[in-house]
Length: 195
Image (cartoon, rainbow, N blue to C red; front, side, top):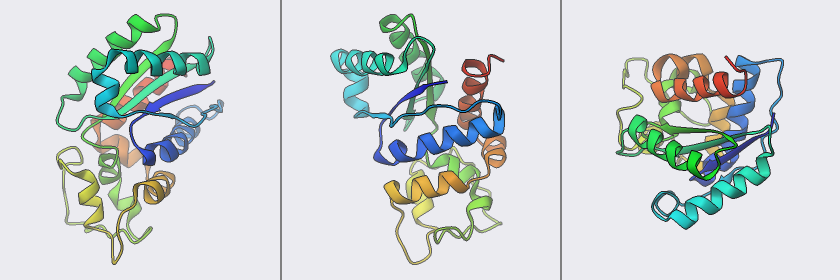
């Protein structure tokens, strides 16, 4: 199965293929996804300029082929993931009605999934998790800042740490604690496994 992704950050360009391969191994071990380098967009231009939106979707559709799956993964930031995701999906389906398309918005940022799986990341890449910290993973407005504040004597780098944490995080922990991560898994199950 070919999975063509549209993402907004350099960190996601490297991390999302790792994550999708891990999700595949976890949810559908009989399938190996072909995940090319994601298409990177500027969120505001992608969402607010119809010609940009259309161009990137048509590019993803061309890379996808007839049997592939298109995944748009963006940070929700301050938007409601369900409302904005449904709006983006409706717009996308009008442009590429012949493609399987999913839209997932990480609530609030991709790093919220690291907060959800924080116990499994403790001690990795200088990240220190306090077991007394019961932060709701989808609450911090600045999830990157939350992760950065817990890095012992070093900074958090999206392009280096995001793929490293993605390769290490406990997917079941993220699934249990993050509704937006469950949405990603649900889309995988529906679009790839046909469940």
